[in-house]
Image (tube, rainbow, N blue to C red):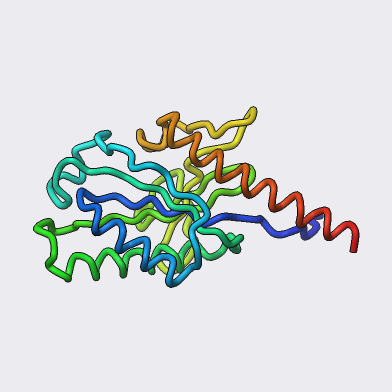
Length: 186
């Protein structure tokens, strides 16, 4: 028989990509206004792993990851994905950029054992959450590092991306350890 356990502690991560630094900066402001301060920000990574986005976003894309500071509930992913879609749409409708889709936001969760990504698209390795949002386990934490699955996107396979997410996981681990210690001493 299953027994309820402690919550799955998570940190919200949003991968923001565009060819416009101003669009990324604006998106981060929208995210912080809704979800609180940023704990970690990655350097901007060149995004050249696929030509899939060129027709709607243009060339010379780069990606920036932001990790929000607050520990969040694992069931927040559909809400965050819906909010990120609204931000993308607002940016596109601003007509400040020439592209049909000047901004792409991909929210996910760092947890102690995995990194999850939200998606609006179903696939064999994705699970439906709610509100037309799916989740996939994009990376697993194994032997002290995040490791890829066969379906993991090429950019998430990059050592620098996995190291950045590993740093977020280390931060989460430290916080969870403090929570567990304070719970035991209560």
